Length: 123
Image 1 (cartoon, rainbow, N blue to C red):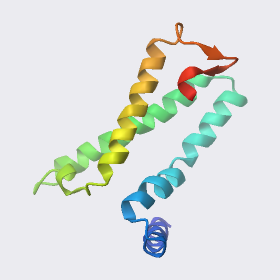
Image 2 (image 1 turned 90 degrees about the horizontal axis):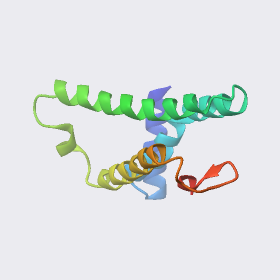
Image 3 (image 1 turned 30 degrees about the vertical axis):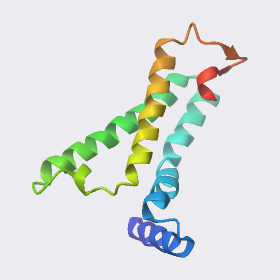
């Protein structure tokens, strides 16, 4: 199944002309994040424990970073970051920005304004 998904995304990137990095950010990240989305929706709507949703998403992010660290440790030729395509810098910067917003809003949650049940950081 993963090989089929990878082959399909390569074909989509070639046919649309968007490039593999863009398809990887948008399509692959969306498809692989669906379990976190379902867990988040279930934990908030059915169980009423939004902490599980936040922990799931942030824990997944931390685990993905851990995977990169292990891959980098076992790749003796050069760091993975030096082999990654330059277009990945945009997605890395966007991810850092979003994590910073989340961390700031978790620390300042009592002083941030909200509109009903939606926090300002959601925008």
